[in-house]
Length: 255
Image (cartoon, rainbow, N blue to C red; front, top):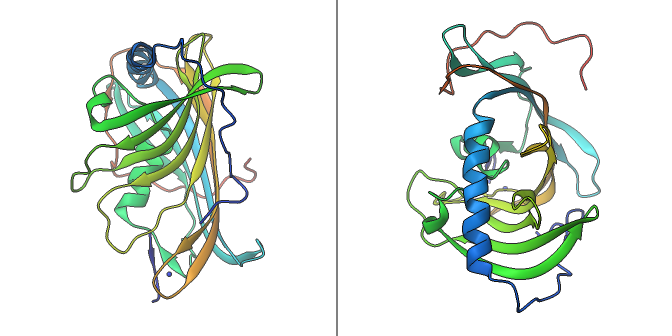
C-alpha cells in the first residue's frame, strides 16, 4: 500500500505474548508436525467454496471514518468443469483518498492474512519457539515467524502464530505482510481460525487497526475481512484466481 499524496505500534491489536517457557518442548519436532498438518489443511481448503467479505476504511487519528473506503465481496467457487475461481459479488467504486491499493495489498489479502505455513514453505522462514499461551481456553504453542530472505515479487508473513497443542494447527496469527516493496507500508493484522469441519481450522476473521507511516503523512486504517459459508466441493479442482468476473448490483443486505 502506498500514499496517494506525499503517506505503529498497533494499540488496538497489541498482543504481547505472556507465554511461559517450557524446556521440555521439542520445538523442531512440533514445527515439522504442525507444518505437515498445515500442508494437509492447505490441500483440504482448496476443495472448499466460501465467501470472502472485505471492508477497509481510512480513519482520522481519533479513529473516526473520513469517507475513504474499499469494500468487496467475493465468492470462491468452482465452475461446472471443476475449476476454482474467484467471482466478485459486490464491488462499489473504491473511494480511498489518501492511499492507493497495490498488487502487494491484493496478494496479502489472498495469501498472507490467511497465513498457512506448509512443509514446503518451512525453509523460507526462521521460526522460534516462544512458549505456551491460551487462546480462548485453547492451549497453544507460540512461535515467532519471519522470512530468512525476501525475493522480488513474493510476499511473506512476519509475526507470531499460535498453534493448538492438540491438533497442531495454527488457530491465530498476528503480524504483517512483508516483502521487497519500496515506499509502501502494510498494516499489522490479527487472523483467527475456527474448526469448521471437525478436523481443520479455517480462517474466519481478520482485523487490522493500524497507522501507516509514509514519508510525508500518516494514515490510520481499519480493515475487517470475513471468511464465511465454507462448503466442501466434491470433485477435482484447479485453483485459478483473477479470472474475468461479472459485477452484479450489490445485495439488499449484507453482513
